[in-house]
Amino acid sequence: FFVVWCHAQGEKNHPSPNFKQYVREQGSLTDQLSRRQVRVYQLYSRTSGRHVQIQGRRVSATAEDGNTFARLYVETDTFGSRVRIKGAESGRYLCMNRRGKL
Image 1 (spheres, one colour):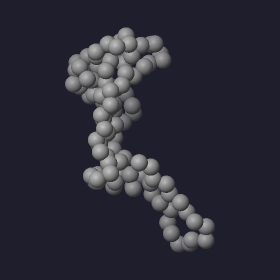
Image 2 (image 1 turned 60 degrees about the horizontal axis):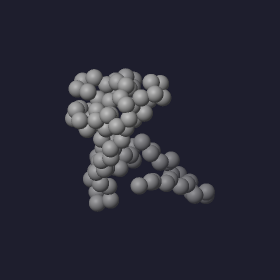
Image 3 (image 1 turned 120 degrees about the vertical axis):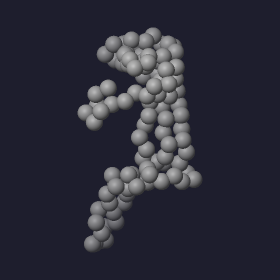
C-alpha cells in the first residue's frame, strides 16, 4: 500500500502535508485493507559472512545457512506499523534502543 502526495500548481493557502503525522495516525487504526503479514527470513551479515541468529537472549551473526535459530519471523500489522523480528525457534524478539544498539 503506497501513498502518493501531490501538490497541484496554482493551489494556494494549503499547508504542505505532514507525512510523518499521517503515518502515525494511520498506523494506529485498523482497516479492511491492511492485514497482518508474517514472513520467514534469514538475515545475512556481510561482516561475518554468516546469518543472524537468536538463541535465548543472545544474538549473533554466526549461524550457517539453514540453522534453525537463524529462521526469523518478520511481522507487520497495519499501514505504517513498525516491523517486528522474532526468532522462530527461540520465540524472542530482536530489540534495539533509539540509537540502534541491540
